[in-house]
View 1: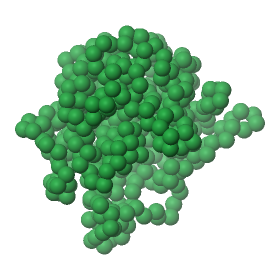
View 2 (view 1 turned 135 degrees about the vertical axis):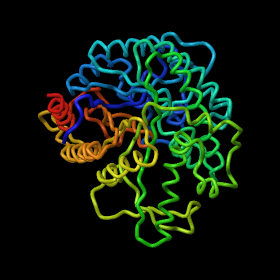
View 3 (view 1 turned 45 degrees about the horizontal axis):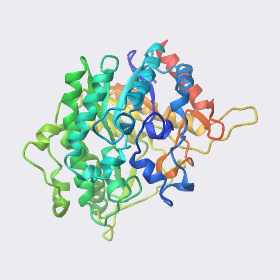
View 4 (view 1 turned 60 degrees about the vertical axis):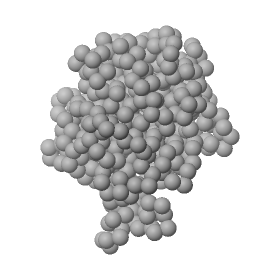
Length: 441
């Protein structure tokens, strides 16, 4: 594998998944606090109340980042830690906590990458319909202004939103994520999607104004869709599933929603006001891509979207996601060819396996090592073929609260014993550290 000398090597986390401290120093409740404390929503009744206790152990975690040779760390700001009710009075203690984290990272020569929204909406805003209310885009603008003013002197890399598709569809149609709303039609998911796009459009110029030399992007979860067969019906089904990718790519890069999907969604389309989609195409410095797997899709007339998923023979993680590194290569080539972002960052990539701590206190996660190497090799090939891929953030730095799966899935390069909070660098973490050292030498 060969990477440019200035390639950015990092790892990623999200606030609710690792911080804990959910009722400390004035933090308000988020929709994930409410969701996890609702019986039956999360496996085993798990919550993020403590998670990996990063709120108290951040200094130890920075030292572990140094042990992994990380040059960068992507983390998210918990909106309710800054604005407990989503707007209005700022919680200075929350601002100060992230300020200490940022200073600690910089002292360790680790570049901070901030994600402004990684799903933990203040519950007070959800009580006003959350992402279904157009005015939430203005609330997000005010929040962005506060955070970018506070940290813009030290943080130059900013991501507006993480995976708006997941926020909209799993939160507002399928009910698998907070706020847990369910519907048989995509009306709410499409409305939430549009308001997320408007929030992104509001945030970009605010960051540029407040942060001299800012590099601004958005992170989209992009999953390639391959047809199960060469039959035209299956190929059309794969195109429809790919609409989940294009529904978020096209507004950001082309200033419109994809015509075929807009036609499919015609009875459910949200109000799009004049100028909305011109603003969503604010020039970006990079596109963040989260990718873990691919989907193999067949036609299913009985499904609302006319699709069903097929599991070909292969290796699957404990998330039941196929290990398919060539799909990442093909995705990177396609995004470069069709959308031409200035830069691309892999902002999340990783795998969940059953990790066992040996009697000697080691974690031999051979399959995660193999996954990491295979996907990084795909990245290397894409760079060689001209893709402007400038960085890679492994998901995740630590084992963490994995949303509706609770603590049953482990993605970390570092093992966390949730009973004691003991951290153990896994073989995958050691492999990643060695690879980074080799690329730097």
